[in-house]
Image (cartoon, rainbow, N blue to C red; front, side, top):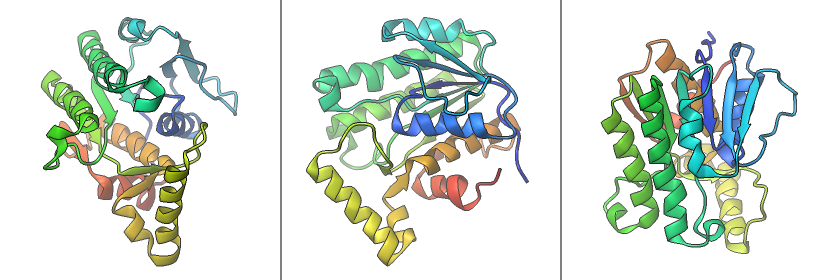
Length: 242
């Protein structure tokens, strides 16, 4: 049986690989009847010209926490898949400002404004043995810890592995080879092998939407909920229904 969409949702990172799928999942869902708000540097895609999309476009990311807290209506749930790469950001320090600092500021602004649920697309390995030595893991871990400390009605973390999907920017040769090998394992060996360390962006997005819906309906397993790769696949593909 389908579940109803969150009362109202704001998406941060709606122009990225996972975020664009989160947005399209909500906009095309027959159960979505309320506004879907976004905050981004550029206008998000809206191929169906859905009247439910309410975008806020501002290239100055320092304004985003204030913009989030002043959204009308105030979203019940915020989903952040915001993130960049070291190359795109121009170094680790600049990547930290987006992946860590901005996500932390957005979570704090959401809590102060009265948002009930915060969903964050993090990454696998944030609690691994070497995570404290890896800057990328440190960024994600810091955001996770902040969300938990803010004590939302529901704090939900997704930790996907390698994210598969069509990207706007061309991949370098090494990335393309890696993704090809992973897809080959899923196609020729077993999809369950691929599932252990890689998920499609669409599957991750659906899992985020489903988790948000469950939180809205009081069906989340707890107020602090971490979805590892197996549960992402379960919610976003194996049990996904519309």
